[in-house]
Length: 109
Image (cartoon, rainbow, N blue to C red; front, side):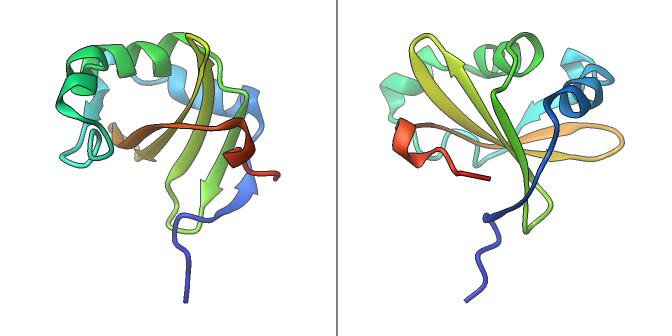
């Protein structure tokens, strides 16, 4: 079995931050799958605007490329750890998935 969401390469934080800075707020969009892991109540708290703010303003502590070429980005924000899966192409950033994880779930890459 192939795990397409397995991280295969670590990305330097400066390289990732530089890449993200090229996109405007309007270039970052949620997909139908973005809030898949969230309850309705969580969706009221964590809006599209909140996630875009995290991506644009916060600095991740770990970034990797997955087997499926999406970026797996880890942030510490408001006393939680977030894993955000991003599909990045030359025109836009798709927020594929957004969810909370435990410290023990942070991969060692």
